[in-house]
Image 1 (cartoon, rainbow over the protein chains, first blue to last red):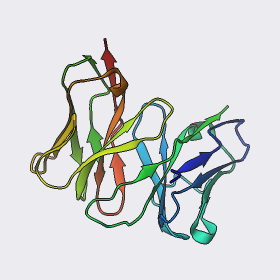
Image 2 (image 1 turned 45 degrees about the vertical axis):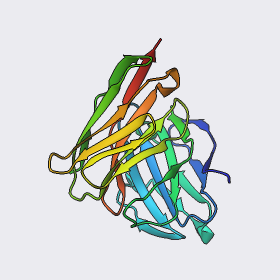
Image 3 (image 1 turned 180 degrees about the horizontal axis):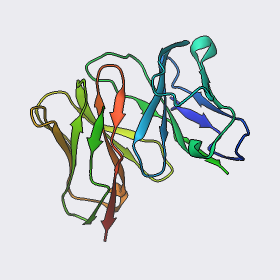
Length: 116
Length: 108
C-alpha cells in the first residue's frame, strides 16, 4: 500500500510568487491534515479535511493560504503571494477515522519551501 | 494556549538507555503520542498513551501521567539508526498539538 505522498519535495521561490503544494493521502483515508514546521519549532497544525469538507482551518496563518480537496482525494495548499516567513516544511498527514480513542496519522515526507 | 515542552537535544551512546521527557499544557486531552522523524523523512508513529502507565513496544516504551501532564519516551539498547528527532503530540479529539522535537544523537 502506498503511503502519503507530497509534491514537490523542495521548492525555492521568490517573495511575492505563488506556490502550490500537493498531497496524496493513503487511499481510503477520509481525514487529511496539513501541518507546517518552521526551522527548529513545533509541527504546527494548519487545517483538517474530512473528505472534501474543511473540518477545521483554525491553524491557517492568513488569507494568503488556500487549501482545497476537490473530490475528497488529493489536496492542494496554495500560498499566494508567498512571504519570507512562509518558509518551512509543510507536512501532510492522513488517517482513516477521526475521533477514535487512538488516532494514528500517517505523514508524508513533507515539502521544503524556501521563500527568498 | 497549548504548549508542549521537550528537550531540544539529547546525546547518548550505542547500547545505552535514554529518556525523552514531555510536559504539556492543553485545553483538551485524550492521549499522548510519540513520533520519530529521520532527517528529510516523514514523521512516523511510535506509540500512544491514553491512560496512565507504561506501554512497551520492543525497545521503545512510553509513559504517561495525566495528573502531572507529563510523559516520556524510553529508548533501550540504543542503536545508531535511532538517531532522529522525536516529537511528542497531544491529541484533543480534534487535532494534534506537537512539541518542538528532541534531536537524539546516538554515538558509537
